[in-house]
Length: 423
Image (cartoon, rainbow, N blue to C red; front, side, top):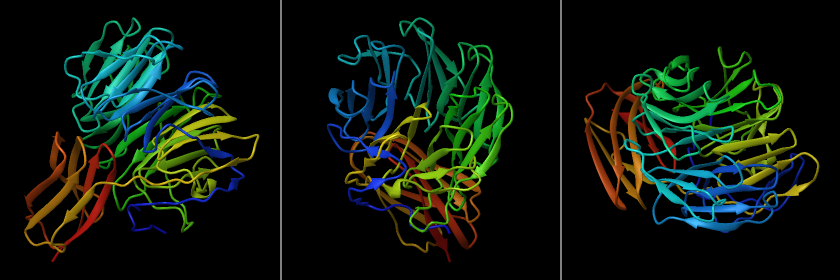
């Protein structure tokens, strides 16, 4: 059953052992972790997007050392070519490179880049990136380890991009959205020409994250971030990404929060995997996504990224950083679901004017989109970069018939919808 609660401010979990072997790791600070990247089973990096921090572990996530921090740049993703050369994307024009394992970072200037939402590396010298979820759409590419970069305008194919996944230097995928729905694009020439191979068909949706199954390179999974009242979805390909099948992600367990904003997805086999969203607890499937159940007793929350090392080892970044192993009992720790933006619509029911107030605590981006009661996109109301903290007030004419509508808010820290009624 769909839970009409879109988010909760605080989610407390007692220390308890779980059969599913998910462990909450201890890092230097709390706050949402947007990304995690392990170069092997022991050495990895995690980025705290709330506090703008990069931390490193050399013992499989057991201990962490703070390496780098910025003042007010939302850190989004991190990848490494090897133990020394890495790249750090933000939701600003700042894009960083390290040559010493993250001890120091230097800025890379690429004209046209407004944010880097996705990064991927191939071999020992090729790096791809993409952006931005809040528009516009572009790809960046380096073939020499990050010394030189090519900017590829993707506006002919997409309005926003979130993720890139390359199989080799020439063959790869990019996902995000266009005017028709959430999309997956494919290239076979290193990013010059792209073909749309999947579209969700619902404007406002994103294809958010992609994974190639480590044990079968013909099998791919991806997550679909949808809009209330629709379910978020898992899509799967078993033919190398040429055709895709979509399956709704939901659970009838009342403890599993309904969340259409599915983001993180990770599978250790064709049948066994997990999914999570901006405000949802972890859901698990053992039948390839046909059915889902609450996993880890609700201790793993708000996952944006799963990094599957192998069938026995998975890392996940969300409200905290999590580690899955299949050979030992683990414990969870006190966890707190991150607080979203304070958004008020007044009055509600509305008349012919839609008035919105949003409190921003820091720099941000905001895309406001209006949908009808069936989740069909009506129009985008606003898209802007927020440069200062404080209250932002919006007012829009509302020349639409009486009925139920949803206003969808997508920012750097959350994606949620608010139901409104016009009398």
